[in-house]
Image (cartoon, rainbow, N blue to C red; front, side, top):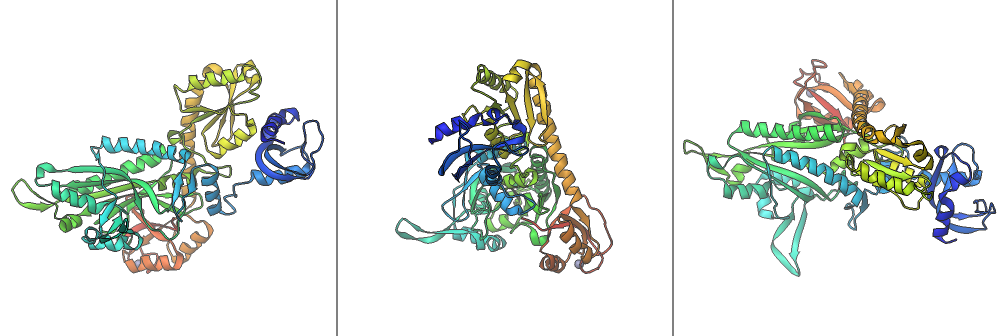
Length: 545
Ligand SMILES: [Zn+2]
């Protein structure tokens, strides 16, 4: 049977079979059929290969048990997250069409749907970066080896994961080049050339680019050989100014995560062990994924004067004295998309917060072959495009297929419109986050959709926050620490003496790392959770991505 005829036949199958579309699913499949498929005239089809789509009913199986069982496997293309979270993640990024694997191990192709989400996040952040007085510029991809060597801690931190260029065409290069893993040294060298006087300060530059880190284990968005990001690099006259900038940009990241991506974050400082290579200190925002693992969502570094000394970035102050500049750097990456997937996603696929969704409303015409349905659906698209990012799927795929597809893609609202709806003067709105169905009168659609988008945004944040709170424990002893990791994995609040050896021992014994020393300290006991000596600080610990 030709694919086209088959689709034609199956498009209205739920209606033809008298199945309520709420209790059935339509799926794409390739299956060798041995005689139980329903053919148009009610006859069976002899052994043959089917490519196309079909319907199964969850409740009263009117299609036939055997077929339904077989078909169920095709519907369950996503592994349940409770079963295998890592596999669930991989299934979702592939099935929702966010990425494909690149030809080199560990590299990823960001597909249009994934890239559109990145563009939205990028545009929001870019506006905030500019609002806070920064300018965008662009640096080259290659760094000479000798330049990277100039700051000792920095090269030590990055050496294991840099990619080297050794040849240009057929010729071996006199000096090896590094493909930028980050651009501190490029900025530093440039700043050395352009900063002379206190009048040149501050310098507030940012670049949007790609970077390469030769990671051993990779996963799309979370850890890949190449990723997209922005890196801000600034120079200031005083340590205080640099400190203020470091904190300001952390707050910008936190707002992006909480107010737009609906992901609650903990703000704090990294321990010396976990700070950025070459930094005086690193501030971080940490988020908690659905499986109880933490993810570093963004970092902002106070670089002190280390790079200024190494690269001779000095300015004459008002008294004419030469001083090194105080620097910061801060970065936000495509990793954030991984966080969004793992915080909001469910067993039906992605759930995208409305503010960053490239499509906020997907219109699905029902029984679109009937007169007037498509016209009405297109009218709605034009009308609603004034208030939201709206798309329509008027392809000849069945409504059920489309329902599954756009749930998988995490589009916040689905709008269904069919002959009955038109007759009754309403449209059906379905929320992706709760599955709730709302009948909205045609004249109220704008108000209702805006209300729903806002409500979904808030609900996603609240849900994620509650989840994080449920998954945050207090540990006063290592026994409690290990119990929490075992029975309720998530953040652990515990006291720390400040000694790196305790931090290392905890990692060795539990594989949990210190995530941050939160700005909002809570004294949960008097002594270090590991060594029982007097505690200095409260730290959040967790297993992390
Ligand atoms: Zn200790």
